[in-house]
Length: 270
Image (cartoon, rainbow, N blue to C red; front, side):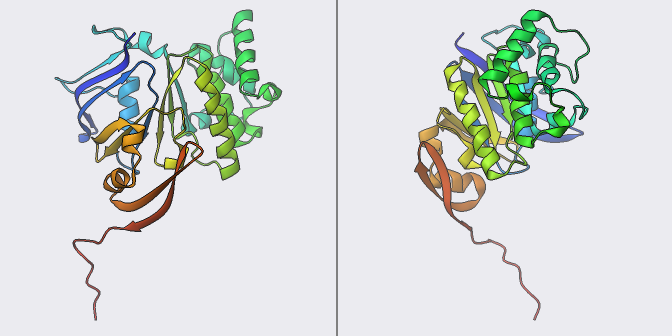
C-alpha cells in the first residue's frame, strides 16, 4: 500500500451551501497528519468527506487504500477508526465501558450482538494497552470525560484500523486530562495505525505527526511537512493573526499573538 487516502478535485455542498472547494490531497503510507483550522474552516466537512459521509459533486473523487477503482464504502470504513467528543454523547449513560469498546467490532452505538471470546480478548488487550482496564465494568456516564475518550479510543482500535481519525478529541478536557490523553495517543506510535488529528490547538500536535494541512474557508490553504508548516509565518497567514511559536519537547506552543490591523476600522460615533 502506497497511499491511504486520495482526494481529487472535490467540491462539496451541504444544504445548498458549498463547504469544501477544489480539495486535492493524498495521505501516503507512514504519514501522520494534523488538520488545522479555525472554527468554520471546514474541518468537520473534510473529515466527513474522508469517511464517506459527504460526497463530492460530479468530477470529484475520493479513493481509499491504494484502490483506484470504486470500492464499497463499507469495505473502506472497516479499515478506519473514528474518535470524537460527539460520539461519547451518543451512548446511554448506563452502558458499561467494556460494551462500549466491544461495540467497535460492529460499528454500532451500543452492543446489539453478543461478542465472541476472541473479540472479548482483543477488547481486553486494548483496554490494558491504554491503561483503562479498571473501567471495564463502570457505566460510561459515571466516568470522567478523559477516561471516556480513552474508552472511545479503545473502541476505535479493536478492529486494528489502518487509519484512525481523531476529530478534536480533546474538546472539553481540562489541561491535565488533555495532557494525559495526548500521552496515551503517543503510545500509538508503537503500532501500525496511522493518524489524522483534527484540531485548532497547535499544542495538541504530537511529535509523531509528520505532516500538517491548514484549512481556511473550505479550501486547503497550505500543506506539507510539519517542519515547514509549523512556523510563525505560516500560522499567522492561516489564522489571520500574528502568532509566535516556540518548540519544546517535540511540541509547538503559541507564545505570543496579536490581531492584524483591520483594513476597515470601525468609526466610533462622537
